[in-house]
Length: 574
Image 1 (cartoon, rainbow, N blue to C red):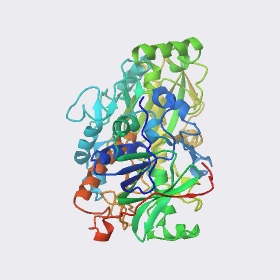
Image 2 (image 1 turned 180 degrees about the vertical axis):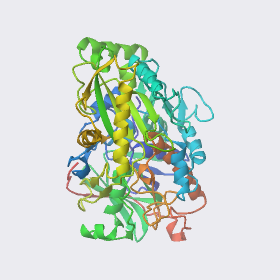
Image 3 (image 1 turned 45 degrees about the horizontal axis):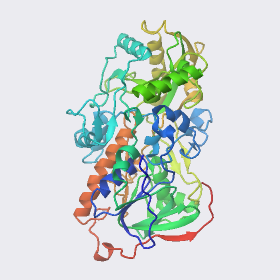
Image 4 (image 1 turned 30 degrees about the vertical axis):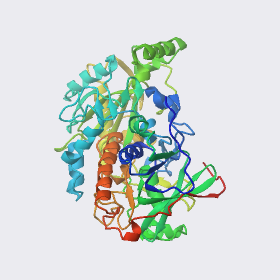
């Protein structure tokens, strides 16, 4: 592997674009914006380089799930709707961000998700508008088609070998009226089948691999890792740059054109709030001067709550069995070395299902991830018996949470409240999803293979008991979104070009801009958002507009004195 460029910034260095966050979206932006040699681009990433082998082995996310350096390891506040539990929220803290530690699942969402965004007043975000950006990003091993790309940087690969458990699940779903599909990503999700994964030749294809590696040798692209953003440099309502800490030293870097927040749905709103952009009452409570009253910052938080049902399997065909002995581990290691296949190459979740369980017309409202492994929680040690997991989640929750300041300390995590299961619709859909999972497990195709329901267990009966199980055992499926939502209503934070309302020189480009959560995994949509944003950013630059779409004054067009400044500060918390 070639050494990643990480140039030390010269003492008088100016950049056109400063990207805050080297994660899923940030790596896409770094590639696309630096493709024009005239653009000087700096990308700041709080975590280290993506050198760990556990990042690149697909099964390795079991190791990175609780990794102290590669994972932010956030927790929500005690959730009243979840029996007072604090829910663990892993987020990637390395180049590639969460695309370097996630479950690798390639899902775009439904056509209707994006058409709804457009119907809310966000021109240019309907399915037909965003599909070309999905296609542009994609290198599908099946080749190019109407709905898929064959030449993009981000590899999407089939699972090469069928698994008996997944085949039985597909057959059982047929009994329940769910059709088989080989493509969850053409806009119509309904069906059951194998997921495609973000892998290439048995290795993870994160956005750091797909987008950053090809761009890293460009002299106009600078990458700073271990660079923790502390806030934005504001000149009135004009964002001029970023403050960040690296090695116990506080730096200031200024942007001639734009600062782009790509720090994710938890940290992008946090940085806005730290910089005086948000709800004035909340900012003043922490002694932060209000630069711009924008009450929607940190509101509208949405996430998918997964409910995991685990089963004992009557045949030794699961990943639990393969990992149970040194011989089994050696066997799967040899299989990967020789054929780039097997558990090391595909991770845990191989099969998926999208269907509808709520009454009335509409599109699928629940999603399943079928894992050939069982454990007490995601990332924990496998059970010492043959096991599998049915993870079900409601696709479009109505419940909304918040991200708010804990203090004015930029290195202290924000306060996160998910507010799961706060509405009757969410509670009903979750219970119906669990009941569907049980019907599937009891189908003719599966009932002789799944010999015991380990969790929640056969004694858990009735809607009230199932809801209590969801409150006690439910967990994130790692899709926080919506906290800097796009729109034109009073609670919107960004416009349809992802420019922060009322602020010049500042955009947000990550899942926080989603007005409503997409129906499925969020990695592919994050890439699409960054692909589309890069086109808008470059188009605005050609037209001589700032990030607010307002023509720049002559004195605003050049910051020849822009430079990185440093000052010694206490190291503080990591």
